[in-house]
Image 1: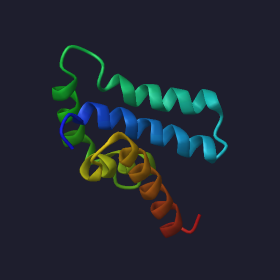
Image 2: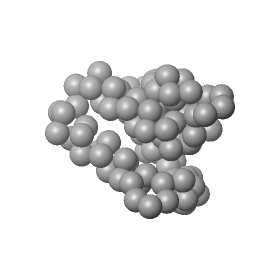
Image 3: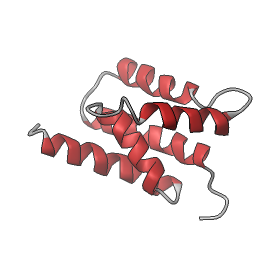
Amino acid sequence: MPGVDEVTLFRAAVQGVHDCLKLGNVSPALSDTLCNGFLVIVDGPDPDGQLKRFRENAKGVANGDVYLTALLSALDKATCEESAKLWVMHSVNAQLLAAGR
């Protein structure tokens, strides 16, 4: 979709992570800490470059990390902010079901 950049999609995907954590009854403080940590990735003078480096580096360590995998999945598949949130939820749900949780 024209006009929707990866940084915007990433921020929406992080909101999807926050929503999943809230649904999972994770404490708001812990949820905020994790999500704020993700958002730091796109703070600074070159958010696009920082996000690109994050994606390159995260692919090697995301295996087994539910939320990191969900963020990467959303960035690969989302076309708008709402779909980024939904792809995160889909990915988290699929991973938890596959793990039998």
